[in-house]
Image 1: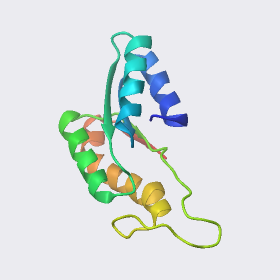
Image 2 (image 1 turned 45 degrees about the vertical axis):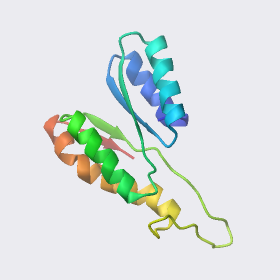
Image 3 (image 1 turned 30 degrees about the horizontal axis):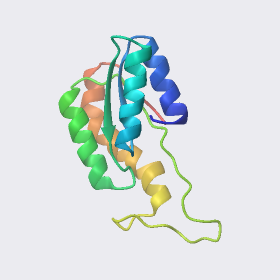
Length: 130
């Protein structure tokens, strides 16, 4: 949520007074946008987490932190995506030997949603958007 659709959506939700959780790969960008939100939307409730979604170990750690801090989650917007590798059919592998694009675009959202499902169910009407 530090770029593009995710950042824009987080901004809209913060304007509406929603409690917002943002994610990014770079701590400095997360802190920057949290500062912008606090400045632009005084009193907003926002939290930020750093994780590399190409690494399932980090996805699990991210989910564990979010789950422990937020027993009730009303929605998740999955918008992180990549098109790594090249058009010659060469694939880029993660440190966990997963195909990078597949890890970020499919495996991470599935794993994160699965791990946070109890928190989504606790809302009574949790939603997941891909």
